[in-house]
Image (tube, rainbow, N blue to C red; front, side, top):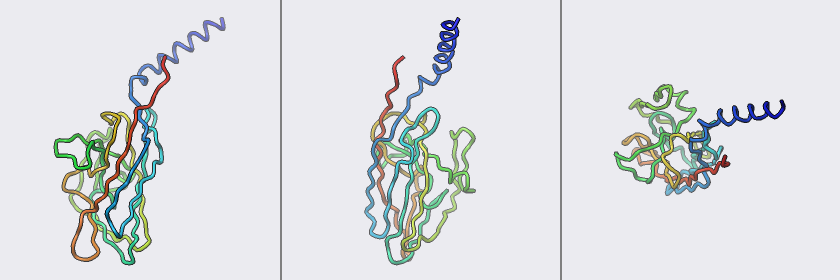
Length: 193
C-alpha cells in the first residue's frame, strides 16, 4: 500500500513539473560597467542572479554625482535611467530585437504604460528633468524574465526606445548619459530526469 501511494505521489509530482521543465532558465554570471563621464559614477549590482520559472533575475543600477555642483538628469518614462532593455550589441539597430527590462518604477510612473502580460509598452514623450546633487546617488531595480531572453551569451543594457536616451547637463548644453553595461548570461543546468 505504501509503495502504491509513493508511486502515485511521485508520478503526480513529475507530471506537475513537466510543463515547467521545457522552459529555459538563466543565470547572470558577470557584469561589467564602463562610464566615460567625469562627474557621474554608475554601478550595477546583481540583486538576484537567477532568471527562473518562479521569479526574474534582478539588477540594481546606481548613479552618483561625484562633482561639486548639481547635475541635471533628463530621462523618459522613469528617472534617471528611463526604460531599459537588453540587446546583443551596445549599439543595436532599429531592427534588433530588444528584451525589455521591467522595473517596479514603471508601476509608480504615469509616463510608462505596460499591459498586464508585459508584452506591450508605451512611453509618454514628456521628459522628466531633476537635479542630482553633489554626493547624491539614486538607485533603480530592473528585472529580467527568463522566458523573454532569446538565448544565453553576452548582452548589453540599452535604452528601449530609440531617441529617448537619458541626458545630463551642468549648464545649458545637454549631453547623452553614455555608459555601457555588459551582462554575461548563461543557461542554467537542470537535473536530468
